[in-house]
Image (cartoon, rainbow, N blue to C red; front, side, top):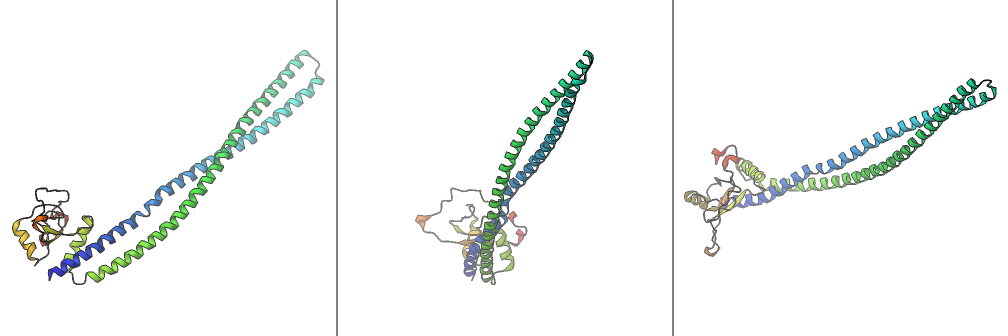
Length: 264
């Protein structure tokens, strides 16, 4: 009778392994978008900062042009007054005013040229960033659509596996099923393994002789005392004898993997 249960557990193992793998993939799917979204957010933030620089530079250029016009008007005013001077002192004072106004004009023109050059650079960078943001948005939209389709496909697969699981589990003890599902999750999809030459093929640990005899009888569902997997006996030919001298504790976690180990 237990042989039928073992076969069902093996079948269930395949179903659950695929099911849990798909569930993990579904959880990982949104993470693939995080990097692209973060990059797009940074690009937009940088774009806003550069756009603010463009607007500020435009304002500075506008203010400089106003000051330049005022300096030009002042110089022209002083130059007209030159025809009205009567003394050397008046000439010297007026001449200094004209020179100061002329110097101011030159400084304003110099600053205007500098900021106009900066403005062209900012505009170029803005245009480049706009194209990059547009490209990123298009890629993000395409990837979101692909992820949506991929998710739908995986959910369909998951539903199919869940249906297979329901068809496989009706005759299985709920407690055994609960423990088996936990083992599958914690043991990389392998929850039932054969005993060969007194060795658990899941963790490669040598099992006590009396315990092996109990497994051989197949009357009860028994768990490996080292890796917690369900065990069934598998006879092997002498020429294919399992080498028990090579033991690995790579997967040995003991029954502590399961909370209610007294039930084993």
